[in-house]
Amino acid sequence: MEKERSYARKLLVLGTVGLVSLMVLLPIMDISVANTRNTKQLWIEIVEPREGFLYIMGKEIMHSFSGRTVMFGGKIYRGRHNTFYTGIIIKAMASKTGAGISYVEFSMNDEVIFMDPHEPYEWLYKGGNHVFGWNTIKVVAYDNENSVASDEMDILLYMLKGGI
Picture 1 (tube, one colour):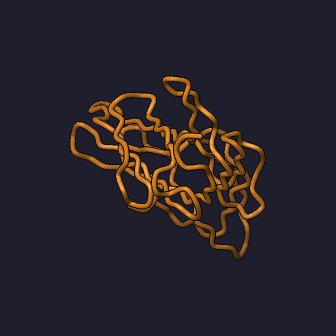
Picture 2 (cartoon, helix red, strand yellow):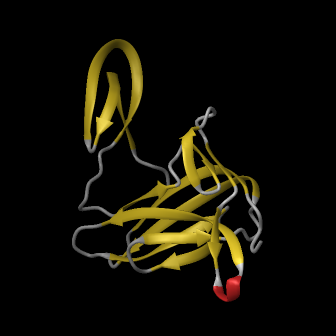
């Protein structure tokens, strides 16, 4: 499911603060402007990692030069029995007024890997089969009225697989 877009002629978005956009009219340009969120409808957004940032060992460093999300290594976590592993946290924010959310699915390259029925919606990805190269993270929210909303992000991922 693609993000909804509306088209406005002669409109340039200078910046956004919350849900308020600062705009100026221009004589020739056609610019696509994302619709503001309607909290009565189901929506979901990937909030971590942030799109267009560079991460090293799970820490956000800076905007990436390519404008794409790039992750080198995951954060190191301590498991049971003094074992250690690396992982990245994927966080999503979802909402719907009224019906509520049943659960959120987390996928990597169209493979559903985790389902979270409770807020905060997050998944600790420990590697698996997708540890090197371009990957697509997708989150899908399902509400109690059988509505569906999704968001996805492409990331360049380089991390150790599993335990260290």
